[in-house]
Length: 386
Image (cartoon, rainbow, N blue to C red; front, top):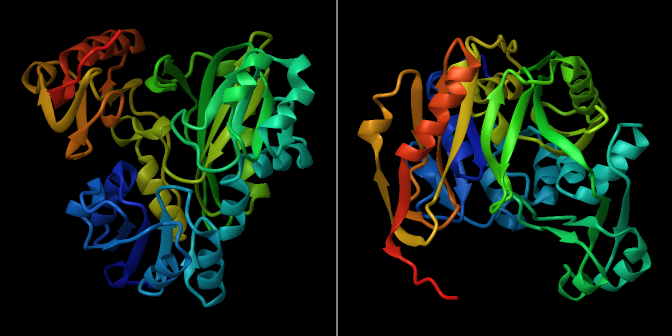
């Protein structure tokens, strides 16, 4: 690792909002950043030192990009791992490591990893094609998840009855027991190359029922009795993976008070956006510290926080329009992060709002108010058909 960080060439696979917020932290360290992304208008492109247009799943594209940097990291796990393996063998520092990514980007391998390491998770079966589902119809309802490529609720569907099999994903999937859970929580954990490990406080999440993605996040968690166990599991996972970087671990809290691991993400995550204002060290700075093998930062909560995902308004698409900023910013302790996306579609993640307050109840009230004041939409109204 270069001792002079200003000489470091840091490459990022992906240029979305996570890359954008990560680069904002890297700029504080005088680090030169380069992104690879197929979108010419990728949110991170306006602040990265360079933007290479290219497919993250193409071996040659990823390999050639990686050869131009000292350290290579990701903001999305769906990348060409074979290229990363070749770069790692040739001495390029790649974090998180390809071996960890190979496990995490395949939900089937993820579940097998939990089983092998005796980690608590929902019962599951691996299937190769949708016809295999008929062998398990007596267990329905169950969740069906594509093994690769899913994110933000995409690649997931509920199998209620055998009638749903006709429209099921046709390919390698995980069929998972449907959990009667009380809530979903998450812990973010970081690990550097020296083996130093640090966790952020556990958070609770409320999901948007239409988009199946996080709409509100609350910190601290209302399930403090489970926090030490959740943190210990997160530490075990990142340690067993021998992974360097930051890892988000999402849990189900069952009606009987059990913790079950749902999924993991080897990068900054939606469940850590609030840390920018609410914690002494943000998840983005912590990821930077981890992959550069610097001492990990203080993750303590400065004040309770609520994070609101800003989603594209229903029934609109096209060039992005933002309304209500003046009214929003009159609220005390409210911080707005827009992601710079040129176009907006219904339920697309366009930004987030963080509200901090010494009283979590007040923060929740302000967050609800903020979510109604700010509207991000496309300029074109969609036709509503019955």
